[in-house]
Length: 314
Image (tube, rainbow, N blue to C red; front, side, top):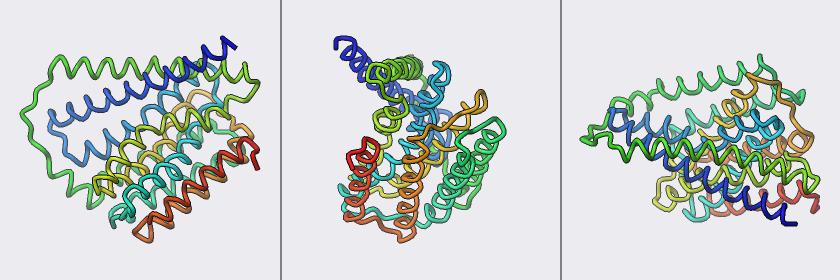
């Protein structure tokens, strides 16, 4: 019992350290971007968009290093499910209605649909190899370049922000300590998952698709809920579009360059179908240009169904 409590404590502490590190790293990166004259669009689309997915990427890389590759796809799929069903659901409820702009519908929505279709096609044989990893990474590069060079991207990129801020030792320290906390948090998070799975005699993929996926989605939750409360629907919704594409194409693609990833039965039989259904619902809601409060409640009910299905509650 004491060993179980020890590793559960390590899991919780590692998650806190990792998320705090990601927060410091993101804040420092945003500030450094402004200092070097990067536009608000580039900072938002690249630094913030990728920054909120840093925990998923860190977990994937350390899962690879610790010899637990089954965690990688499970975490990416679980994070996408959490992002849509839980985070968009909560955001729609607190905002009472999320308005989806034309630019998101024209650019981000088709890209999320394409990312999901490409990932599912590649994952169909329950493994992802080097060649397929290249396809995933090339797809993200196309997504990234299309976003930057789209009409909206060009317009926003031209509007660079001037600042008189200077790089201070405090900023450098925040950047370095954030990166270190993110790395060590992810390392011990994976170690704790492996031990907890052994002690409870459950598959690490089950913990990854639920607890880790939910934990690594907290940055997206904070960004989207804050944006929803402030009436910034585009940020609340766009954050999830970008994060979900990043999870499927980069978080899975990068580790697959180094080893063949096998998709466990839980992720393949339950996680991927529910992720596909959740993404389809999200896209349909996005096309309608509004995500209402009742749709948010429906999303959360589907998330509860997902958790129940994983643990055979029904």
